[in-house]
Image (tube, rainbow, N blue to C red):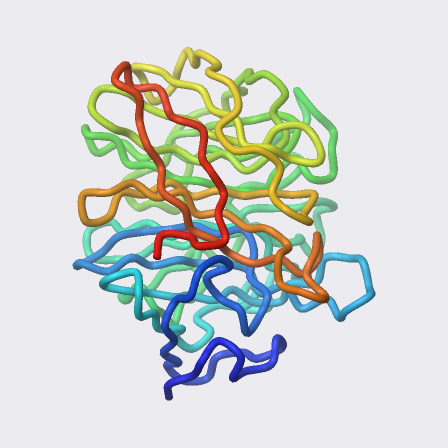
Length: 314
């Protein structure tokens, strides 16, 4: 099925492949999408995002499922059938918050934020699939991270959100996450168990949404800072730090109190994927929209401030 950007209502859940042509930011204009994660596999860029379903005029987060979009040229995009819902985790109450997918040894692991049914607070689960578009199934039958595992530094109900995963050059995988306090832990090669202690990471004005990427010898840890949220970043020669704070990468996103970024290289170019509240007249902090702009580096490896545009990369 082929659709223009106005063809489908904002409440649509994909039941079959839907193709559309990008026409500036936001990328997806026929439904609300938030908290993007991104992955490149076999010449395609995949964007995984939560589906904001909060009805217009209401002001609360309502996300029941995640969406996946892919493209080989960043112009023509496909939305694939919904590959995962919060209710697919039997131990969870719901709430399909921020997530990331990563591939290892031919399998795709989806790290998600959900509300735990029996342990108060947010938690992190893992789903797995043989395909980047799913379907995905719970890989553990239980949460990987629960709120009671991170009480030493913070007792926040939202401690354990926004997972990001990075596999280093030596094959060791790391999970970073957090709200008000950032944490990391090593993962076993099976990608569904911790392989060591949970370690706090001290970052200036850290709020949430950590994202890891590497270019050359530098590791970059970007994250949402303060509230309303801008994106800041730090750099290190090691995946575990110490991290040197470098300042603001992306200013406040239009009409949205939150932001959540994914930074990815595709086709020899770097991209900054984020959300704003730009779809008129009902977009906003609870009806967000994924956007894409270019990311550039300075000669010393630091990042140039991202310029948010309505034209996007097109």
